[in-house]
Length: 300
Image 1: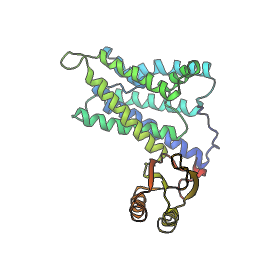
Image 2: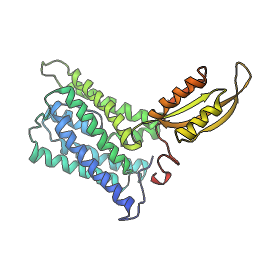
Image 3: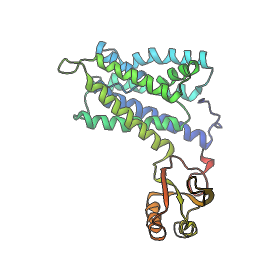
Image 4: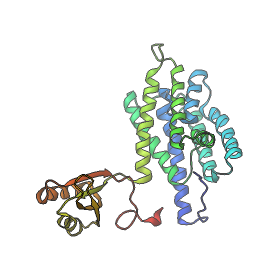
């Protein structure tokens, strides 16, 4: 999982990558100060730990993060090698500087912009997801828990995705040391933080891979010719016909495979219901589709 990329300087790809990086980093910093810190939330990462330290000891978010982020980058480079690239350093620097500006001059009191905690949590998750999605699209990482997870991945058999979840989950537990307004254990901080992480993950997927409007459909039917003709001529989509053998009956069967939008799928289902109501239809989410008629491989 390397984040070093070699876009040609000042090329369209280079400009696009750095625009994503700069915008994403600024949105992350603004979201943290406006929507996360005022409610004492810690949705993973070094900024989550910094929020807890700010709540407990009134230390500045930027100072706490700097004290953790820079050693992590150095340690990660020593253990993993130069895997992060200049863009990750740029992202970390922009976020740190923007957070310092905001908490010093713009929002020193960490006032709550949105009064309702749940609405604030939803907004925070959305903006966090957009910001990190933009950073990922630039082929960079915001550092923090990503670096910790990559170091742990080198010495364990767990996947990087699972390790990121474990690290962020442990960071969320730090919110329990913060007393709530009633003086009890602040379970609400942890719950809201977990909601942010969930929403953030969904938004990241949408930003990086696009909104999931397409479905993969596999149809086993004796009327495969009629179904494939409907897909090709009316829906203007491609289809592939496979030949297989039914494990139970031992009979040779034809299966039609295609990818289409939700709307097109509903039209196709009506047609299948008419020509073969006993057809076997399997529909799954198409998380990313590359190729003719969809996203070009050249964009990757």
